[in-house]
Length: 319
Image 1: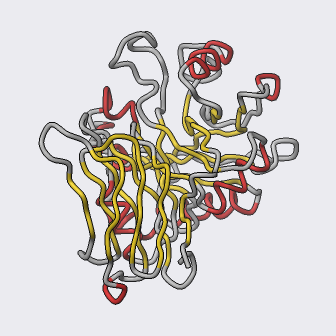
Image 2: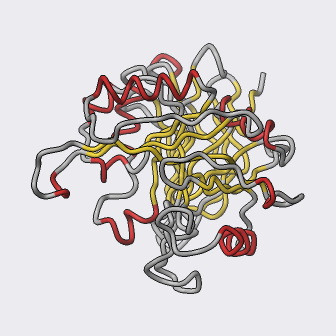
């Protein structure tokens, strides 16, 4: 029987899951951010100003949904040069915007144990928790493996691509976590502060990374439930219209791409590269079901070198 992992019938809401306004260290007002993002097709924005969770309910309309969020950071102390310090940042997104508690923390109390205790407290207070800009944080793969309780992983972060000096797309860390048993969902985000270049400039820190959220309606509870189910994927540009599997055959439809690849928990994969100068939009391939390593996921790259990646779909559970 054919199983849709991403159905062509699902609504896909474009979301910036990490952004800053004048309420912390961003340059623009809430209203300016809403206007700029709506003009470019975004429906969801997690206003994750530093430290304090806020819900800007007044920005809600039938085509725009603000999420109640904040960014929390814990940094290593002692090194004279900040650029040598490990610094773990994570977003907390309230599942219930009408009833949430703040998560107090000591940003100088750096240890894996303390970070895990903060994540546990955020989870207990009903937050969806996302690790931010992994390479910028200077964590190794094994250090990330020690982090417990994450819901999401910022697979792409736009500001580190343009200004932060760190590699911004981190599939190697993400795949390492998946292959070592972490159940974690891919998030794309801007982390925009809007202090370098205006929206009109192609290299600004906005509109570069986003998350497509697959929900029935544009309403707070439905969007959060979709995130909790992993009905979302990270993108820098490509859109996935269909991802299905029937027996050992996968079928994919996307926006124009340079390469479509179905990856697994092992090196086994099936892929369709476009001919030079051309693009592909549809792919059917066959998998060896004994070589999946427990899961499959989809990676799409377009002709501009922009990527999209799904979560892991688990053999015996999702298909």
